[in-house]
Length: 491
Image (cartoon, rainbow, N blue to C red; front, side):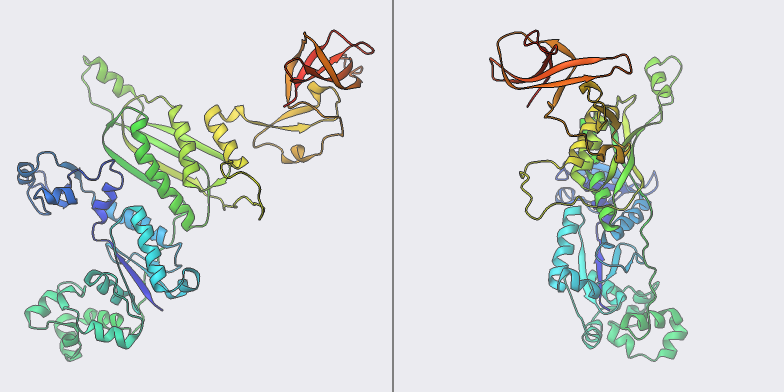
């Protein structure tokens, strides 16, 4: 096996920057007790202004008063690590998040699908850059060696055990990710490299550092098996973003929404599935108001969150389509209170079956496939505004078809219609008098039906051409050529 390690040196900061509209402005993560607030991480603009991790918050404000501060959430690091593990799962079936700030995946089995390591590595880097995460990548025969190399030298790759042993012998013990404080203690004892450490008697190491260090060295060098805690993708998608400020317009919600939908599409691609129904939850903040503050009392009475449900007739996973559908649904919702956080929850994740297309498809490049157009119409006009039609055996035009719900009976819609002459695409709700000079193109088609239900119809239908060149479908009384009643228009 060959293991690739993706180290994430700025995981917490990148997770914040990727949902920031302008990441070029100074930004810092803040942590620590209320009286000892300090910077946890800073972006490039903040570093250029003199800010650095560990700096006290008061000093940071003195150097850069415009820096944006975001509370560091330690639990978010683990959540984003799992998200990237889900992304990595589409490249390998063996993915581990065993070590904080890093992802390890088995790479050799993926070479047949993604090509040799240089091409596979370039693909990983391109996708990580698209997701907005800084990274360091290394390849080695053991996962622990790949982890050590990733933090030491970005892009380092070794594929054989002898070459890996030779490279590990040069690794400083303080940067070899040894258990506990073993690296620092060994360095203080004068042991500088893993090569020097391996040359020491094992009994002495066991007495001084315990068996854990020997087990780590054995797994690091591939002398013993290294059972990893492999990642298993969850059966649902749940992502949440705190906006950091109150948002009162739909437009300001679109940027974080686009990022959340892209994450959902990445997750769906990793599990080779689609989504048919999900919920966008807009979380509001309730204020604790005094009874005299009428405006605040309205906010107290406002709901804690607003749910925007998005349902599709078939599973989809294209980010552009999902974002457009969600945006249309979102724009139809009135915000009862400012939004402080967004949450995207998808539990119905059926298998995704891509639409079949012919090899020599003549459809224009800009044409939209029917499933996508249908979903867009439902999102814009409402679920009840889009129907399908099913044929019936009644020859009367107004009863020759019936509406079927978009998610209704497929068998009724697939039944062939009885053979009849051409019918117009636009049938008027009720016939109207047609005036003006017309020319008969074809006809008549005698229609006589409905005697059994009291709605008797006896008509002679003609295809007429008006003075403006329009093709009309009109009827007259049997045997007459006048007093036309317009019933439809041909395209």
